Amino acid sequence: MRKTSFNSFEEIDTELKVLKLQKNINKELIRFNVNKAKATVAPKNLLGGVGGTVQKVVLSFVINKILKKIRR
Image 1 (cartoon, rainbow, N blue to C red):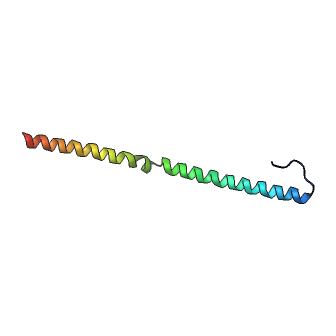
Image 2: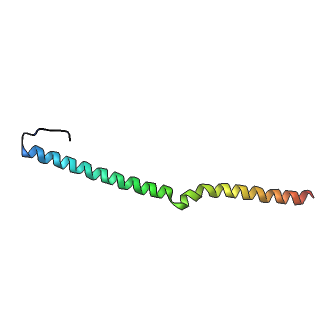
Image 3: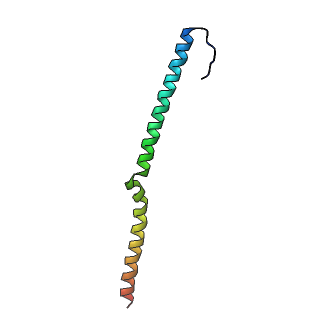
């Protein structure tokens, strides 16, 4: 709370409106951050980075097998 003494009920009402708006903004920020965190931790996003690595490993394995057969 910013102000501890008020000169009128109008000032109190204004302060309450400001606090209510701040509360609503903070709630929306929390919702936004929770949804963003859920999207970041989603299985498809976690496996997305692994997929490229797996592809590289499998591709190099296959190429090595082919090269070994060719060299024999």
